[in-house]
Image 1 (cartoon, protein in one colour):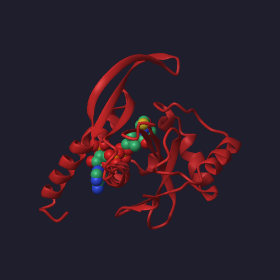
Image 2 (cartoon, rainbow, N blue to C red):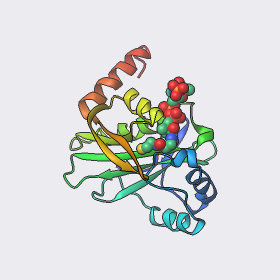
Image 3 (cartoon, protein in one colour):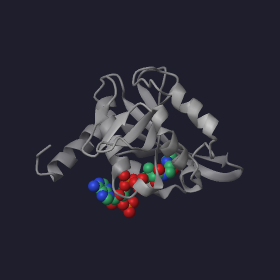
Image 4 (cartoon, helix red, strand yellow):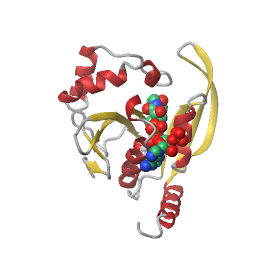
Length: 190
Ligand SMILES: CC(C)(COP(=O)(O)OP(=O)(O)OC[C@H]1O[C@@H](n2cnc3c(N)ncnc32)[C@H](O)[C@@H]1OP(=O)(O)O)[C@@H](O)C(=O)NCCC(=O)NCCS
């Protein structure tokens, strides 16, 4: 199981040195960083990050892997997905980012749908988790549309301010059910 993964408008692929300008641009956007663990990024740090993440694996546990999201027509990087496969081999955590100018047209949903289709077809992987700030309404709406359900909430300090952090989970069974509903809505032309 490996990259690239293609969808109608996107290709999920390794990050590359040539992605530097696009990567720096959205990682330096305060709106995009607001609910992320990171904050801005220097050119040197971005270069090192792209180099370190040049060969992500969809099967190596215990290390965050970063997967690039690019437009299929131009190969332009528009965001990325972080994926942590846990050592138990049965669960994973993920985070996701789409540059502001590419939001609101369903590309985040399309990228995650493409990735989940591959990940959750594995017989061993039973669930995916996402940890999302309660104020991050767009991210919550996105994962709920994908079938994630609230599992727990915690009061935490985030970037110096108290906030509520939700953990949402997508089980393999819920994913299969949501895909069946989507196929039905398309008139069975899955
Ligand atoms: C969270 C985030 C990825 C969501 O991006 P997004 O583009 O809004 O997400 P989607 O792909 O689900 O797009 C949904 C919107 O596109 C619209 N849309 C337009 N065409 C569409 C299509 N063909 N298919 C699906 N949705 C479509 C939907 O109606 C929806 O609009 P709405 O938000 O007004 O209801 C983005 O806001 C982001 O990167 N935020 C910063 C990083 C972050 O906080 N990440 C989460 C922490 S892990």
